[in-house]
Length: 281
Image 1 (cartoon, rainbow, N blue to C red):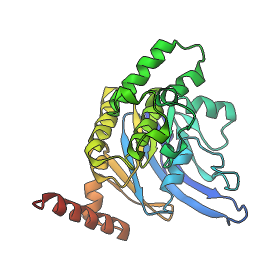
Image 2 (image 1 turned 180 degrees about the vertical axis):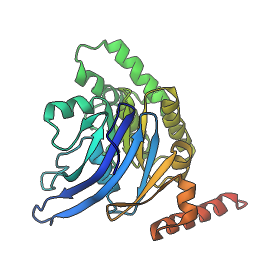
Image 3 (image 1 turned 45 degrees about the vertical axis):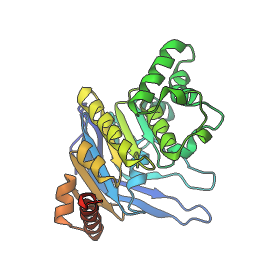
Image 4 (image 1 turned 90 degrees about the vertical axis):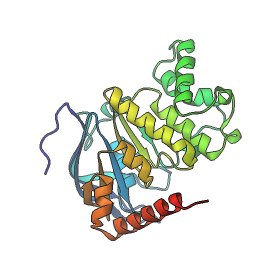
């Protein structure tokens, strides 16, 4: 049990249970089962786990995405416990309050790159969240902000007039990251943020997240198997298995203790990657 939230917390999750109701052809199932965790207002925390562990559902719900992903898929339902995000209680939250909350929470889903609108240019995609909030916002200021974000994810300004189909998968992912951060959110929730991004560029994403944390009121929850990202940006990582937290510690401590078979496998993969990196070409 976690004590009541206060203004210094980005998120407080207390004995949270999340279910997916039955909807043909999918049966009902429990995705998150009694999870408790606290994320400070200036903290970056990681989530790791196997497919089906509940990590993506937890991230999605904390981001305020309580709707069905597709018409045939059920929406997640908070069936037990509570989650407070930036002071808002998510269980039973009203639509107006949820809309206000999502102004300050950026969510990067796992398929964010595939969701980019094919009819819009890169400039329009990144700037769209600004104009969605204020259609009368100064267009020159929007353009400057868009260019700044493009630079922060190490993409050339020459891409501003390009369309998603003209970009590589890694470039589309970086455009999605730039879009999600363009409004300077207080909480950034990202599901595999470095997926598809070349290893030589991933360091810039790590540095961007760390810089945002250092500069001010910024917290993040990162679902990732990218160990360099977790090492560089997070203070703690929660390991999930079958909807429950089976470990919560700095990533190297989790890998060293190997308290769960998934963590043992992750540690072995990490050891092999270190050996390969040090092997002469």
